[in-house]
Amino acid sequence: MGDPLNRAVNVGIVGAGNIIVQYLATLPRLPGVRVSAVADLESARAEAVAAEHEGVRALDPAELCRAEDVDLVLNLTVPAAHVDVSLAAIAGGKHVYTEKPLALTTADGRRVLDAAREAGVRVGCAPDTVLGTGTQTARRCVDEGSIGTPVAATAFMTSPGPERWHPSPSFFYRTGGGPLMDMGPYYLTALVSMLGPVRRVSGMTATPRATRTVGSGPAQGSEVPVEVATHVTGLLEHADGALSTLVMSFDVWAAHLPRIEVYGTEGSVSVPDPNGFGGEVRLFHRDSPEWTPVPESGGHRGGGRGIGVGDLAEALAAGTPHRASGELGYHVLDVMESLLRTAGSGRAEEIASSCPRPEAVPLREA
Image (tube, rainbow, N blue to C red; front, top):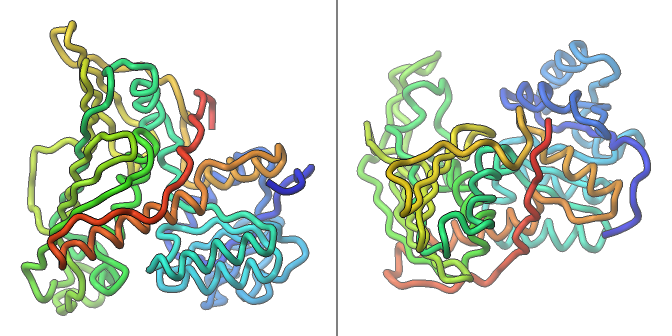
């Protein structure tokens, strides 16, 4: 895993959009991490962030990827720019942690992983929500046999679409967007964390509307063309035999559906929203009369976006694998790409990639 890093990891952030606020609420709390620089194509945004955080300097993206006081580049750019920024950082000898998805295609994702391997640096990939107490407590229930042998799971994300509240929602409906690519990584990463990698998938899709109407902001009332599937249904076969049913939709006004549930030979576990770090886990066992809340037993309590960066920093110090890895992000991307491809063929498809199941996180304060 490379030589251990025996000091704090200096983090440079590329992309000063809305999501940076959540990362900057978490990173200063993490041991072994120091934010040293920020960059954005709109220099004023980077300068505003630097002015609010002592010891952080504003650079342009190319400078940041070469800066001597940056060990790891946190890539918070829009999905279409993820690969270019990650490759530039790797070329500068930096480790990379990128927002999801790893890339828009598996071909580009493979370029990033291959470049990192040749350069001797690491790649991390969001989401790190699965390192929180919600998914980790549920995983512990599965690992300890509280539901017996896992048989199946369901994962549902349904909404009427982000255009009702997002002032500039067009990217959600362009290539690389849609409910699967936008929200699927949270749900699929949680499923892989609990049930292991996926070996075969079959999908179906629908796009019932050709345009969407912007509901707020300066562009309110304008029409956005839809270029992607907005309702995706998939069946996943995990390597150990469990079957997961996935629904990701921007076409559902309301539903009474769980976020994620895992069903075993002895009971079931209800998993909270994987787009968050906490939430109540509930367990049903065949010998109990009702669903029972499960006390937190794993994960980062009080976690926020950025704990995956902290996990990577700890792994660099210890010379051990990190959990929110590029290999995991690539496998999730491979599953999503295959689901969309099988929707056109009507056949099941073997997943070419696999990944190690990330190590469980013991209960700890974030």
